Length: 394
Image (cartoon, rainbow, N blue to C red; front, top):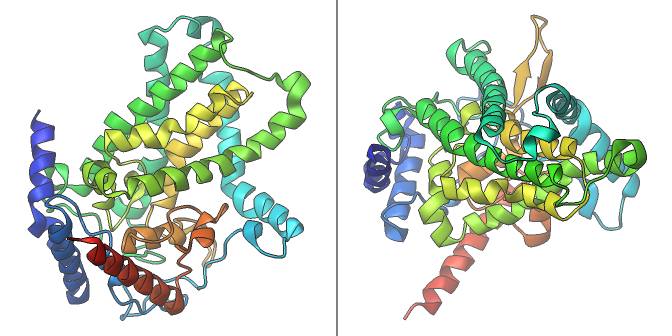
């Protein structure tokens, strides 16, 4: 009950909704205040989904230390999959699936899923009966994997600050004084919602699906006879995940869902590894409904585990707040980090609802490629929508 009361109260504390309690630069303080004012006019409990999008943007190009930027700004325009290019480019699309999707992280999630299925999952015989013992084992396994990935990134980037602010999108660190977060601490708040709500609902969906498999209630395919199909489906897991994400994300930006659920995730304008699945339980129910596809499409438990790990753990990387992770001591060596495409969504709210491998935003005019031209188009779209809304009010 204490948590519930605190959350409701925090949604009303509009003066603390921005990041001004984090000793922000003047320009960022003003931007946060614009968000708060706009939020107050829309709803007493939600941050703005539009005023931050209306803020001016002056992107730099690949500058790590530009004093006029909010932080690191990578080179723009953002490249996306050529999946929807016209005329079609099938060879380029396949190449994109092989490299940006599968290398390096896609291959990592596949290997982790194989390890998890073979060594860290209860037997099908046990899962034929829905009992709390094996469900708890899956919960602990999922929680430990998420903690290992998000915790390691947080330790390296935010506790030890191993690469300082190099490649960091936002100059500020995680807030420790903001009343909008539980215990006024952004990291603790994010850990709470990720482990208590996120992993619980992730585990519930996964456990139900495994129970269905163990009782032959849903169609399944064996690797021995269906390995070509399952191999294609392995890549398809990533495409289904990002497509599902776009669909559920657009729903969550409908005003009712935003005000009652999605606002909690969007308090994190400045994101970190634990922000990834720091969401309201209602949003977790929608977000992890990605499992439901395997209730009707023939698959294999390995596919289910892969989808769960990608959905539950990969956001720790994409929300880490750093474009690149410096690797080793040799200068210039780095690995891909957070997704600037999604970072722009957290910064401006009203763009980039999906992900780059399946760039549905391009089809619906909500794609922001990081350029001033794209920002101007977004501003125009927001003004037009506001005008249409004003015209329909009595």
